[in-house]
Image (cartoon, rainbow, N blue to C red):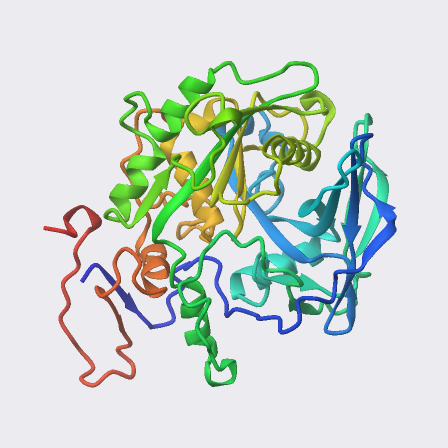
Length: 453
């Protein structure tokens, strides 16, 4: 058996899980707040946030999305004084953003499309810890859940000066956090095999509902776009678009990259492609790589502001909203200058990821971040720390360009296979010695390297 799980009270860190929360009415946030025009409006575009309610309860966020990443060992070596009493370093805990739908209108043509923007979610540390626990318990599902009573505050000064940003604020400390179905589901990057079936939701329990949600999550051909970002002052990663294409797709002979490794770990069931279903050849700088210039400076802009600017510039160049036809979009930055404990980060159960300096080159970091897009959590060791399971790419990834032959641990493999028809499906067993008859059994464990032998 490729994966065997013993149910005896052992916490296997399966990742971010939970039953799907379906919204029966997704039309209730179509009212556009004409008084709430985004601060990113320009002379050629008007961006208006779409606000509304879900199940009669006001909510400013279409969904709440968790953000997780890979820590930057070089940064942490020089900032050990930042470690807190829990042993955590900046960037090791999940953060959260509020996804707000935005209608973008071209003033010249009056053409419009709907996209979304991410606004940092703030609250007390105890509230954020509650969200992290709810995330891992499955009560809060990243990109599938929102929270009642969230408010958006405009023009919040950024520490260090230089800019103001909007923030989404949790209800006051002490108030119960009410989780609701996400108002919109159009941005999920997965194409569900059962999406068109007639399903009686009342007859599906939470376990089968979860399995339906994950059925096609980890299989198929995935369109990946890489975006090289140039800031307003000209700062950009020194690698050419050609080199970036080679490092991620193996276009010109690089043998160690996420394209080859995902194919190897999934035994060909998860295929990365830059052969897009929509022709954007005239937008690309090289195979699978687009270059955009943003109206922000990396040196005095926070993480969220840079991401929003890069996303907007990419959508403007493409002429349509992300993710569009893409399953994953990877943004490559020259460096980070504010809140920089991360080597890379990704939006959980979503499609976007960001890489600074040379970390985009490392297959271990590439697979780690796309793993977060695929709803995989970090893998910690028995010491309780975040990244210390070194048997898994969701633990401590391999920080080298030419080393990447690693897959995921049994807990993550179970999560992937449990969805059905994914990688190791049909070779998974669950055995509970406390209830099984007989109370003992003999099983054969087969490692990933020998799975097909």
